[in-house]
Image (cartoon, rainbow, N blue to C red):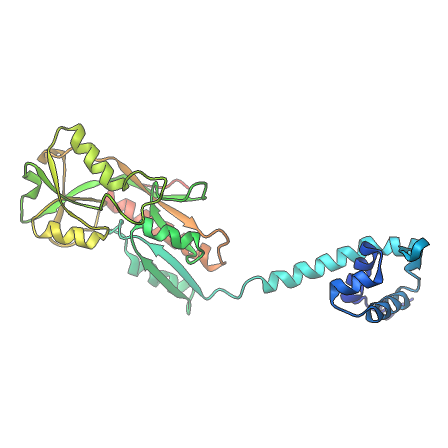
Length: 313
């Protein structure tokens, strides 16, 4: 027989055939696919016409059994049904991605976010980038809830056993005003994150930067007084600009009027911190990976200005 003249197999026929074989009953198979028993019987008759053989016989007690030809067909029928479902499912699983939801904390004030977004727009014109700006710990619940495609966060606030990529590693710095001398105060006036931050993950005993600052001062025997708390970096910077306190932050780009200070001015050295990149559990693609690449390049530039170490991958 000419190959081109062979009739095609209908996947719905094969699906019903496989269900009847599994259930051993036309009636139960009909219930599973939401059809009448007579409709299922017609499907089997059509399938037998296509393959040229009977595929079922009635056994003892009225149980439906496969013929030898039916047994030969069953394995291949299941393969075709599975292949059909895989193909259709892959196209229906997700709509085409036209936006990226990015969680970006204030903690890395040296990032050139406008430049990053401009470069991304050239690669993916027409894409909408929705940036959620908040402290790292406030972004974590959004990621876990599937409301972000990816996010940057500081080391330690990432959910447990959640995969991440290290983007950047560098030292924290004391920040003071260029025009005031709060850093010389005794006790040292501080503007920090609140100790009772409502977003702090349950697995953290304290805000990472706040804890690092207080431990460094206590180890050095330096007296201090917390005069202002805010989870918002801009609020802390305003307090420092007014000459009321010092704060801790990353570098390199600080608002005009602020500068870093350190051991030469009597303040203890602060530890390193890291910036981590986290993706959603099931990230929408391909834009999520493209944005991740742009973030990596942006943090590499951040590291080159700060003298810190970019991630090795």
